[in-house]
Length: 291
Image 1 (tube, helix red, strand yellow):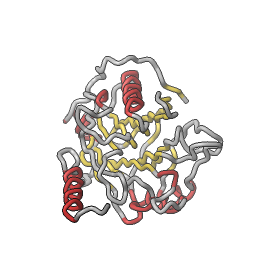
Image 2 (cartoon, one colour; image 1 turned 180 degrees about the vertical axis):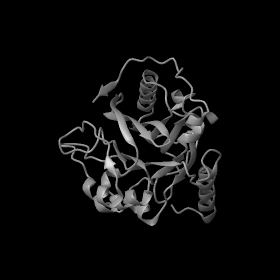
Image 3 (spheres, one colour; image 1 turned 90 degrees about the horizontal axis):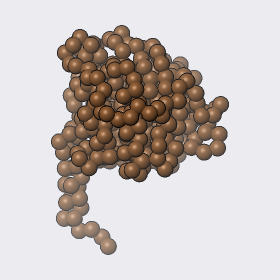
Image 4 (cartoon, one colour; image 1 turned 90 degrees about the vertical axis):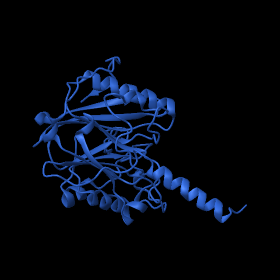
């Protein structure tokens, strides 16, 4: 049954409203002198919306981002040997990006449950690998960086498809946050949650992280309406801008668009905003696998 033109207009209006509702507009993306750019990209195992496996195309999108640190999801095959899918040598030669060293899940793999962090700026001080609960095997990386502007912790994750799994995974991440020394922290990755209010499966991240902050639509890549990919900061104003990287190449290279966040560590550490001690009251029971 064909839709009437009026129905099509109504559907388009609804989608426009979803994309432009409060909390889904990007923050201003003017990069300051002290800014560090952090990105997140679900590369969909290097398979584009055209169904073509093209790691070179994926790598070109990664270089387009021009970010200092990039959290990659689905960097490895899901089954079998879980081999890495990207040409890391090419990325280093062309963009200066190198992988944060971790205990990969196979000798030929890049990441931890598909999570890979690339960096070209800063020094890695510590790496922890979290096992996340849920129906599907999932994980997260917790990496402490030293940058010129100060110290930063990045928690890079790819949360599950099921709501209950995401709730459990968010609680595990908060427990890991509780167990760590307090410092400016980013939670970044494909969190698989588009809701930003009380119905969000990420509600347990409050008050440390604000799940509604800077949510910008990144999925599906050809007509993004859902903010599945997030960058959440603690303190909340650590992130000064969030934007979607929407280019012709990015629209076909994966079913997700990359997102970028601008952060100003110097402003946070100068005392313009307070880094709160952890106080969620969650158990410190460790789900941490140390290197």
